[in-house]
Image 1 (tube, rainbow, N blue to C red):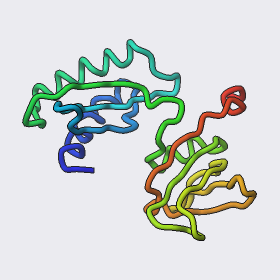
Image 2 (cartoon, helix red, strand yellow):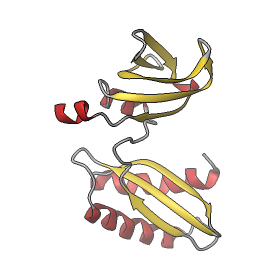
Image 3 (cartoon, helix red, strand yellow):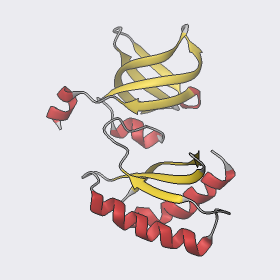
Length: 158
């Protein structure tokens, strides 16, 4: 995470939490000749268009006031989608039992890509039951990316 995105996160998270939203992820970069700041928000009951509009208004006002971004940019606010990223320790416990894809920075047992059922987070490790039939514990600092995998069977259980 760059210094700028870390600063934006520090500004935005305390604003969203009392509103009942979680900042799942944020991305900032140049695309097609313009800068874009994307915020991905969530809450237990899900996200709708009204939520995105409300968050966009309050975040835009905050960023206009604090002015951390030195040039013009576009602000986009959306839900993280069905295959949301898992980034925080709490995410791995919240979504225990769900199907996930995980990629590590370095190979573990000769591979970097894993898919299976998330068992949770404990003692600094993400635990999962792999599709190959065995359990694996991966230190969180070795996880490059992790995200839910949409599975209709999971959705029907909720």
